[in-house]
Length: 152
Image (cartoon, rainbow, N blue to C red):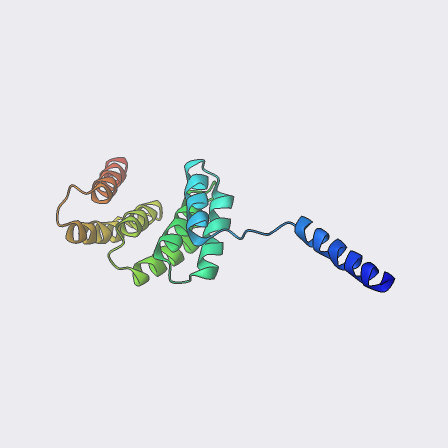
């Protein structure tokens, strides 16, 4: 009987300890994307890159994550245009109709002094939107106009 009580006590002690072990909640893709967008809103490029890379690790075919990662590379203090172009192109390969990626790669081309490439993405946005009033089209058109005004 003593052996049974000792065994029972040991089992109960083990169960009590297991209840105290913290459970690791791994963020979902949606939580990571939300965190990336929040980091971008705060211009926290490092965390935006971290979160989007985690998403891409789980979902390599996530065009939105590639687009946001490219945006973070482009907007950081020292823009990494090579990596930005790489991920914008992946986003557009995954989703050729991705309006945000067309707008942002167009802006990256302006940063790289390639307005003719930006014009191609502006034309793509006009076709995708079916007009010239969608936000992405207007933003890229304004950026292109500002670029041309600064470099007559």
